[in-house]
Image (cartoon, rainbow, N blue to C red):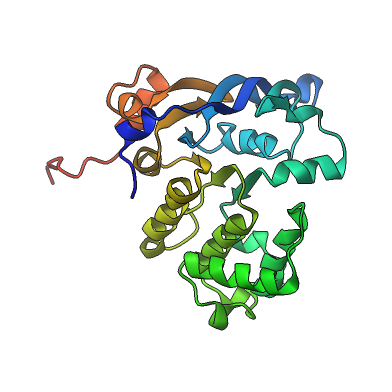
Length: 275
């Protein structure tokens, strides 16, 4: 059962991610570009939020820092109270990745073109601290494929180019199920798949929260997606978070001028046009 937004907000949760004064600067001197400019926000355990902004606003750079795929210039990222920006070495990063995972915009780029689906999913077990037996791995893969609505017998031996965009994205979600992280960062997860697959992918992602208690952060430029999925919105422009709050409040009563412009750009289907 999917809880209403008002019910979800009333749940008592602790903070799982706490971002403080996070900054990322590319280049130096005259060539310096501030991609993320001193942003702060927190995410509660089990919450769904969206970081919403136009291309170039800094939202994907923020996501890459949260995933420890990019080191910030300054600031801290606390995961369950520990600053992950100070983690050293591959092993510490791998341990963090058992807790925080991602689904990216382009599912094709996430696959090695030489790997079958079975090999791709099997590699996810490398992140786990305790390795299941070969028989247990196969059973887990079969179960996760079933849970994302895919026929394992038909698809496990296929290569990425033999799959549709929607199938590849569902396989990415199956990989998340195998790892079972605390936090999922979904960076434009439906922007490169056909319209008929989008609702199914979004509902699969939201179901991770309902069934597994997963915290989800959407990175998106799509106001409709953000409103449909999220308890809270963070609005980002030119590297700064210019507004944040409950999704209903931000959408219906925006305070910042940039947020107001975003809302005004949403098409109104009922509008009468003089042609």
